[in-house]
Image (cartoon, rainbow, N blue to C red; front, side, top):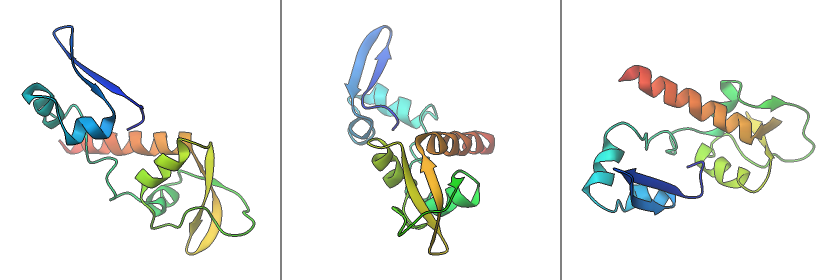
Length: 123
């Protein structure tokens, strides 16, 4: 989900080249489907189960005074943050209904990497 397009190859040949969502939702063939199910790709890390609150509670933000209303409430999915951060470097976030700081692209990458690591440890 961090790339605009992904290319999946088999034996030096391109099997499917498309957006991450398109590949996940419409695998080109059985090879791509098996690859996605093999554990090489974790489809669940970007699911809506992770929120701004998870990132803030785990320290993946920069605490700073924010004037006004935060861009994102704590219940917003990380996936939504990631979509917004594709177009800007940082967004302001809240905790307990109050603006607490900003989350940057780097924070999201570090958070998702940690979630992948945790998923791998469970397997």
